[in-house]
Image (tube, rainbow, N blue to C red; front, side):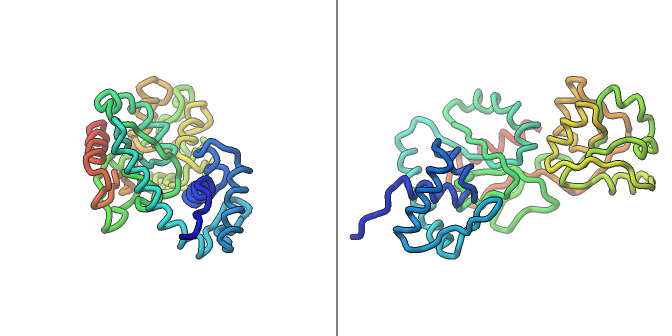
Length: 283
């Protein structure tokens, strides 16, 4: 039987393949980015194969890397499952976007842990869609216009209502929809402002400030930089605290919904069911 590569090198490669980023892999493993890169280079030298294409902004798996990562990920999952058998706690990993995590999930997680003290929660917050087979994710919340695949179960979580919000000070200058054309509109990656303006019968090209994440647009609205168009559930806490107000009665109803997404056959059905039921109960 040939000698196996060092376990640290295998862990470094597996984490890097999931994140497609040495820095994020290093943060997960608690080592330096240089150590991860060195471990991967050593593994490539031992195997005689290039596992990654190094890009200016991250990594891409080569064909050899993809072939190697799939069984390696399954092997680590088996090891994790064996260790879980001896742990008094179960662990459920939930994949969400950074905006959903900061504006909705994290402020409520204390309630879940109080109800289920025997379950540890790992939050994986990133924009990239999770791969249930590769990433070790049990359940996800994603914003989509339709369910994400036949092999997945998708349960609607939020309504599709988007509202205009701004700081209380700015609201004094917005008394009807036509006032929007004279203000800065804070847009996120969903880009729903043009649809809202069209349905409101407004023409012209208002000033826009664009953000890659909804949470950033909401934070900019709180600081008085303009008006955001956000899902009602994501701004509910800011409105309750008086940091944001809704200056207009008009809302945008769109089919861009939040779904709780799970595999048809989750690897931890009991834990997944508890997390899914809790998410729905919080709406």
